[in-house]
Length: 97
Image (cartoon, helix red, strand yellow):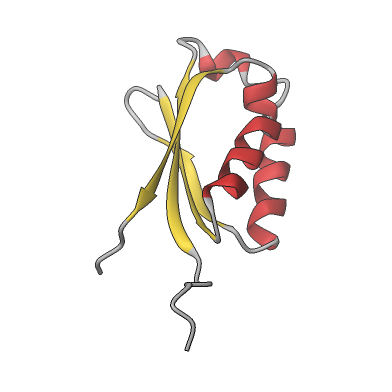
């Protein structure tokens, strides 16, 4: 039996948004949502959404073989491309339950 794991891992992608995200996202929101839904259909994106009150960040959960999948998603996301995201971070998530 091989000791190398081929199982997917969970990752959390956190976006920090510009202050006026609700107004500035309007022109690209449908493109961003379509991009995310396609990633979900392809199997790596599990769930995602903005935090509330204030909506200053977004969190997306991935189940992927490595962090590069998440990095590629972020780099090509319309919100990142249009500079609605001031910074983002990717962390592996050790799911217990």
